[in-house]
Length: 171
Image (cartoon, rainbow, N blue to C red; front, side):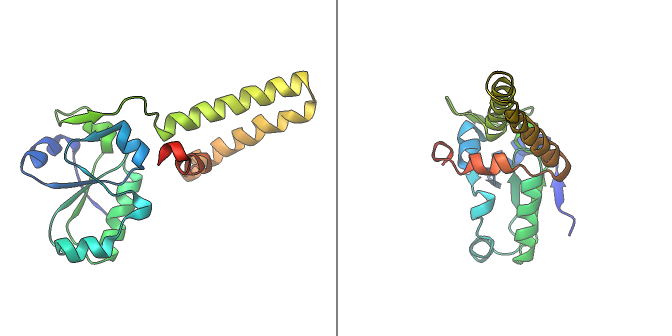
């Protein structure tokens, strides 16, 4: 199934009309920045059957994530559960930030993406230093991290991001 999409520019009007907008990012990402009035339904906890029985199959649902991937997955899950009116907001929260939709920003919250960059950079730097100062075998740490980043880029999945999302500070 190809997901139906709407441009982020339509979000302010839809929100003003009381549209149901769900955000399928993690709680930490949602707390960092989200559209006022959107509801948090993390993808890994999205109960499509309950949502379909509560709303009906034809109630429009507009889905946001960071960019588009998780929103598309949520739309497919909703479709499989019998919902026929779900729309992915093109570009996700990143695109919504460039519109005049009302945004709520959290304080002191670091996005999963930034946490991955911090952790990967720290592991590479520590591995390189340890290989120079302690033992040459530590060079495998930055090699491992680099291979993980290449894998993440190719598959569009990030193991480190998934692990960080499960950390207590991201709940």
